[in-house]
Amino acid sequence: MAVQQQIQTKIDLITKPLSPVIKKSINRENVLKDLIIEGINKKGGFVNTHAHLDRAYTVNLENFHLAKATLKEKWFLVDSIKRNSSVYQIYDRMSYALERMVEQNVQAVGTFIDVDEVVGDKCIKAAQLLKEQVSSDIQVKFINQALKGVINPESRKWFDLGAEFVDIIGGLPAKDEGHEEEHLDILMQTAKKYNKPVHVHVDQLNTASEKETELLAKKTIEHGLEGRVSAIHSISVAAQNREYRQELYKLIKKAKLNIICCPTAWIDGRRTEELAPTHNSVTPVDEMIPAGIPVAIGTDNIADILKPFTDGDMWTEVRFLLESCRFYNIEELINISTVNGLKVLEIPYIQ
Ligand SMILES: [Zn+2]
Image (cartoon, rainbow, N blue to C red):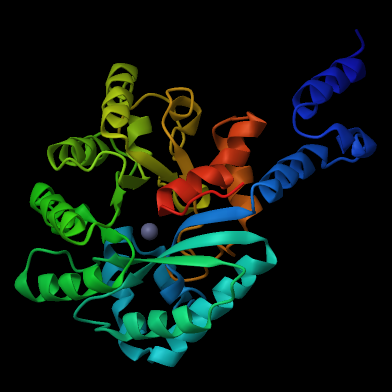
């Protein structure tokens, strides 16, 4: 069979169950992209499960040089932006970002907002304004970012205030390094108190020395929160050996943990001399989906000092995911971009 014919047959195979009309556009070079976008739109549009819209569009020529700092340095470097922002500036950023999302047919967004001793309750006030103004075209779920940790008394005070306001309890155990278990216990006790789901940043640094996804799964089971907890990133899972990964996937399934993949956020994981199985710095979606683990997608930071060039384009994220994981299952890519995201944000999927 000629190569062209083989390609045609393959395209026919993957397109038939989704769209009989796709043959009309079979010769267009972006046929596969169209196919995925069409499937996403049929399921109500993209779901951006992870963002930090309160800091979106804060990169400029004055602070751009800070983008070279490490993640942990940036946790402090964003302080001056937070301190110098008014409620209305934060509202403007979030509102502008949401408009850009609506333009891409994003049906729902989950965004972290900083609530801590530096920014105070300004993001809560901005989020409250946004809730009153937001268009009915998009649903927004707020999640509190614990950028100062949750253990020291001052940070805990702000965490508790944020937890009461938001829809989802957010966490960052690496900020309470050495006390990660305690950090997760506080998140989960709070989640149970308010009957809210939990989203936690884990395994971000692409090193086998991090085992935060495993800890999160164990804590989820210990607290009886199966099905209500999502791990954001889980990049370092790919740095572990095969046996560890397979055991971890079983544990993740037992904990009914969801995984949120933000492909462009960590594709820039730095080269190190650490030896590990050959892999790239992306959540191993190609292994997780076949293992039966729900994976959703997010943009993470948009045009701030953490990710100065990220523009919040959802197709870019899907493209990075499918390319970096060589994951070509069209149906699953559509689910990752839509219904899995709704599940993660606990928004019912109405067909
Ligand atoms: Zn994040």
